[in-house]
Length: 132
Image (cartoon, rainbow, N blue to C red; front, side, top):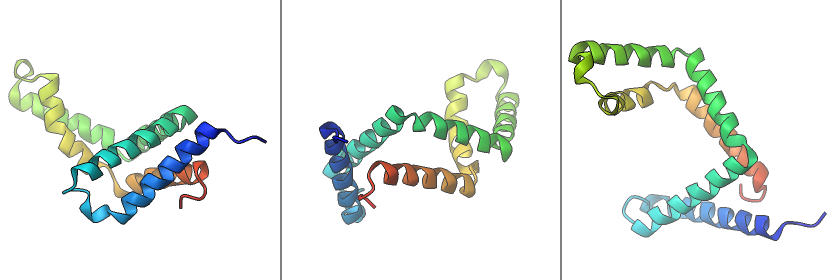
């Protein structure tokens, strides 16, 4: 079976970026060049996730897990509280999103985060077996 040269290039770029990220992890916050490389790595990973359809599967898994653990109901209740306190006419969607985002992120259970992270790692290791 002939290997796709474009695929090999993407894999090599991803491996190099991940290796560099591990090497320089302490410098990430203070180095603008590092931030740019991290952004490039995220773009490559996101592209692979989208092309394979794994991104949609991960989103569906996340949606399911958040409903199962009651996260969605908690966030709905929080939204209702905000609207009651401020009044319907005084709340915009943007205001609501700004206020609930930190709460929503904090309420995501650690086991859900771990499961998604493991699925992403598994996906990446299957895409580029020599990377890990």
